[in-house]
Structures are given as structure tokens and as C-alpha cells.
Amino acid sequence: MSTQEIPCGVENVVFDFGGVLVDWNPRPTLDGLYPDGVVDMFFDRSDEWGFWRYNDLSDLGWSDEKILADYEHTHGPAVAWVYRQYFAHYRQAIQGMIPGMGELIEALKSQGIHVWGLTNSTGKYVDAILDAFEPIRALEGIVISAEERLHKPDPLLFQVMLRRFMIEARSTVFVDDNPSNVKAAQDQGMRAIAFTGADQCRTQLAQYGLIV
Image (cartoon, rainbow, N blue to C red; front, side):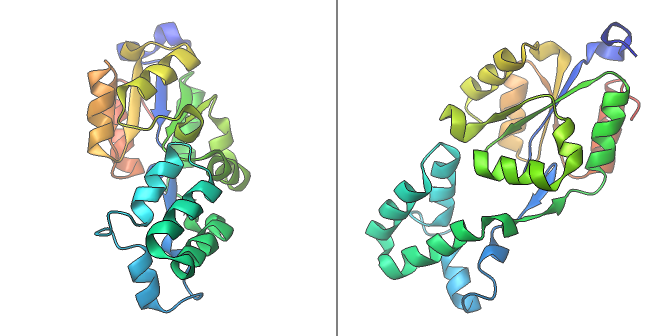
């Protein structure tokens, strides 16, 4: 099917990575290395200077060494070593592909739909995901937040993505599991799906005229 024949003018589908294409969970990087209480403390979301803040900074392009140095200043060298172990075992955070998403990518491509990626992540994570999951290699291009020094839901990152792929917002569906990112895409003129699973995503894509 050519893009001229695609219903509703949809020519592109852009996928988030974590929570949409892949199951990402950082806890397994430390499980078995430390007692559960230490792991709980390390991933405590109430720590405003903890892992999740620095994970955001990583997605904005901070290097591992810069994060470790800054984290050690706040938490001390012993806890910073825990962070170093997280970096050493980061591939264990990639738990697998979300069920059904490889088949969905294939179905879209078989219709002549262009498929792309836009992720709050780092180059090393994206490389590890591409190494592990062949279906994701079918994406025609990927914009990675750390390489742009911007992350979703910053509207500028969506504009970078549209320009990089040379696509129009009105012909694009964006898929993300974060409601703030979904709204940001809609604000840029894209149709957007708040992802909860492959079957739900297929159902909503069908509402845009895509039979997948």
C-alpha cells in the first residue's frame, strides 16, 4: 500500500522505547548484589537527589562519570559505588520486548507505514536494545534524548524529531506510555496514543484507519 492510499493520512508511527517497545526495569541490575533494603534505598523515588533524578540527567546527556561524581558529593563514596554497579550491569535492566510489539512493527511496515523511534534514553541503552531485539532494528530512525540534550516532554525534542525524519506532524501517530509525553505530541499537532499494551495500541491505530 502506498502512502497515498493509507486511510486518514497517517504515514508515520513513532514509538517510545521504555514501556512501549521494551520492558525496562533498573532494579535487576542490583538484585543479588546487595540486600533488598539497600536496593530499596537506592531506587527510593522520594530522594530528590537520588537515582531517578540522575536517570533524568543521564537522559539529558550527562556522562556516567559526571553522574557518579555528582552523586558521590551528595551520598558519599559507598553509595556511589552502588551506582557504579548499576552502570556496570545496565543491560540487565532490559527485560525483554513488550509482547506483541515486534509483530505490530512488522504489520505497520507491511502496509507501507514508516516506523520511527523517539526515546528518553542514552546511546548505550539504545545500542543494547538494538543488539538484543531484531524487530526494533526495523525502525527507520531513532532520536535519542541524551544525544540532543533534550528530553520529552520538551516540545523542542518533538520538533527535532519531525525535522530529523522529514515528516509532518499531521501525518504522524506518536505512541508513549507517559501521559505528559502524549499531550506534548498532541500539542505539536500529532495524533497520539497513551500506550497500555500491544492489543490496545492496535485497536487505537485501527481508529486511525490502520488495519494492523
